[in-house]
Amino acid sequence: MSQKYYSNESKYHVAVDCIIFGYEEGKLQVLFQHRNIEPYNGELTPLGGFVREDETLDEAAYRVLTERTGIWDLFLEQLEAFGDIGRDPGGRVISVAYYALLNKANYNTKLLDKFNCKWVDVDNLPVLYFDHMKMMKKAISRLRDKISYTPIAMKLLPEEFTLSQIQKVYQSILNEELDKRNFRKKICEMPYFVKTEKIDKSGSKRGAAIYTFDHKQYSELKNFHL
Amino acid sequence: MSQKYYSNESKYHVAVDCIIFGYEEGKLQVLFQHRNIEPYNGELTPLGGFVREDETLDEAAYRVLTERTGIWDLFLEQLEAFGDIGRDPGGRVISVAYYALLNKANYNTKLLDKFNCKWVDVDNLPVLYFDHMKMMKKAISRLRDKISYTPIAMKLLPEEFTLSQIQKVYQSILNEELDKRNFRKKICEMPYFVKTEKIDKSGSKRGAAIYTFDHKQYSELKNFHL
DNA sequence: TCAAAAGTGTTAAGTTTACACCCATGA
DNA sequence: TCATGGGTGTAAACTTAACACTTTTGA
Image (cartoon, rainbow over all chains, first blue to last red; front, side, top):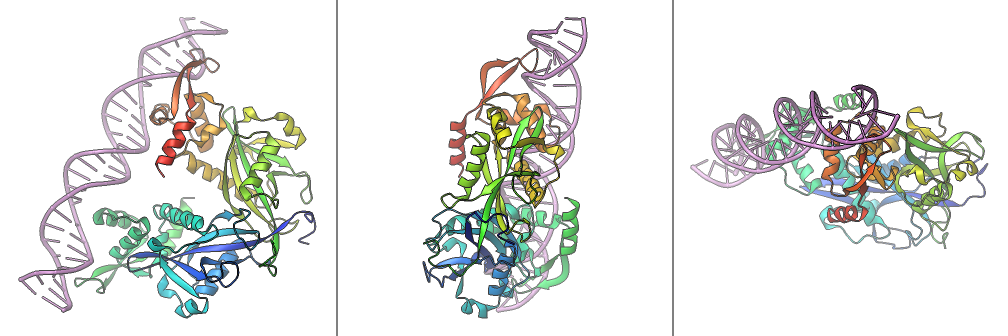
């Protein structure tokens, strides 16, 4: 069936590559894996895999992510396809790049060793091969754009967080300091950030108000604006 | 060589699909082609083709465009890859979608018949098959975003144009009326729109100043801001 | 002479930025 | 008691939006 009409045309390997962002201690991080296949066996690479016949591109990316992190709740979006001829010296591979945001606290650290993965600060990236640096740059620039008009940065944090914590997340993504008052003003204007009665004492003696993200209200608002 | 390392993995047909925008008489238009292959033989579809082994994805898109329009000077950018399993009933095809802007005045109309193509107003789209409507929507929304911070809309017009003409182009893309004074203010602020001494009498009795686009200055400014 | 498009500035509204001090608490 | 991070408002700068009349000229 898959050969019914187009049998004269060439076929190619198709892979997904996921730039996976996490956050810890004020730093935006990316998850890499040591390649276990030639060429460049052992070198760091974004998490990727070949697309299977029974899955869409998005599903392939999601599979790679969940099977190697143990996390199901994440933000995932396609960046674009990379298909230069010599991009992979191991053969012609069309790679569809994705980026993802997840909460490291949910990460199953046993899988780190199993898959030989490693978190790296984005301000200290390793040497990357193929066109992986292009993907990285695209991912970071897309992420920077996107956090200005959607609250996806929340996916890097636990369900409960303080305003200072979000601010640090934004700062780590944008790589610049933000004004505390202006930042809080903007956040609190958005109706899906809700202040709880709870106080987080972990970050300061005085304690900071704990906020949560109202997913339901957010998706209602989002749909409304379409 | 292309099989050296990954020979156990599945391979797929990879195609490009181009959403090609043109402009005429106040209307934003898209170029379609009648399919000459089953399934859906004869139905309208964006211009597309399979990726060859000796070309990148961008090159494939550019080839499809130039060989079927006769135009070499155009704006071309990737949208994203589409790879749902059943998207093409003729077989599994991963399609990388592009959008392009070109000046219809340069279009070789002989090619229209040769390739069985047809310009359609975007506000009057035909029934589309596969996931082509998704691509269309993505292309239009990307185009709308992009004209707010880059002057790509110029690619729809001849080298020389009047301010009223550009305004109509913007209006046709955004599908809304713009304020004449505010619009002209914004355009004239950009240093790469240069007013010439020439007058275009074709659109009015009084005549309108002819402007050109300074590509050199634009690319210098653009590079400066990187 | 008049219809039709070209051309032109100002004001109000809204948004963004800059900026500094008091508060509550645990050590 | 003091060091630490939490919390708060206002004014200036800038950007965007709204708005109406005069000019030119060919038919």
